View 1 (cartoon, rainbow, N blue to C red):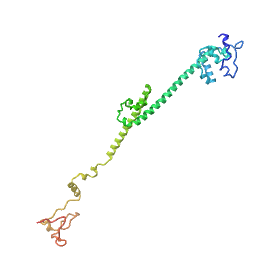
View 2: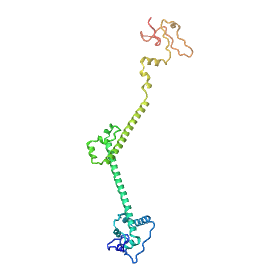
View 3: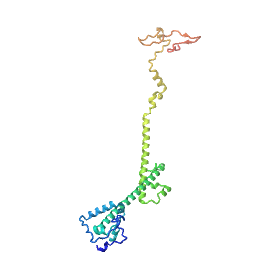
View 4: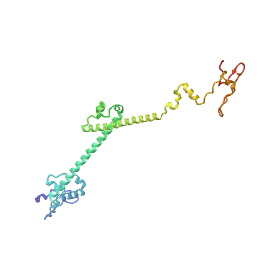
Length: 283
C-alpha cells in the first residue's frame, strides 16, 4: 500500500487499536515497523478473528463486510495497519462479517421456526376446541373424512378466513388428529359398555334354574311333591276281605296305619266318621 494510505484522517475512530478511545491513536513511525510474516494463511485469519471476537464480543457481533480499504480506519490506526498488513486485517474483518451473517441467518431461521411453532400450537388448540364443541355433529361423520373444513359452518369459515395455504394445511392436520382421537374414544366407550352388558348377562341366573316347577303343569307339580312321600296305602272298602282281617300287618320296620274300623264311629249326633285314608264307598 502507498505510504499515504497510512495517513489516517483525524476523525478516524480506530476503535480496536485505541480500545474504544481508551488509548491514543498511533501514527506511522519512521522507520515504520516491519510487517509480521505469516505462513498459515487462512488459519492465521481465523485465529486473529477469534481473538477479536473474544476481546470485543458485542462489537464484533455487529461487524459487517468491508467494501473499501478506507473502511479499515474504523477499526485500526496507522501502526496496526502497517504491522499486521492491510490485506490481512481486511480478511480478518470480513471473516467476522461472514460469521455474523451466518449467525443472523440462523437466528432468523430460529425466530421463524419459533413463530411457526407458536402458530401451530395456536391452531392445534383451536382445532381441539372446535372438535369438543361439535361432538354431536361429528359422531355421524365417517372416520375416513380427511378434510373437516368441508363441514364447517359459515361462522367456522369466518374464523379461518385469511389463512395462508400452508397454515390451512396445518389446521386441517390438527382437526384430523383431534377428530380421530374423539372417534377412538367413542368406539372404546361403546365397546366397554357392550363388554359390561355381556358380563352382566352371563352372571344373571336363569329363571328356569331357580324355579323349574313354575313352568310345569299343576298335575306334574302335585305328582313331583307326593312321589317323594312313598307309596299310597291301598284303599280298603267294605266289600274287601281285608275288612274282616283287622289291621294290616306290615313287614318289620315298616310304618303301619291305624286298624280298619268295622263299624262307623259316631262323632256327635248323627255324624259317622270313617277312616280318612280309607273312606267307605257306598254299597
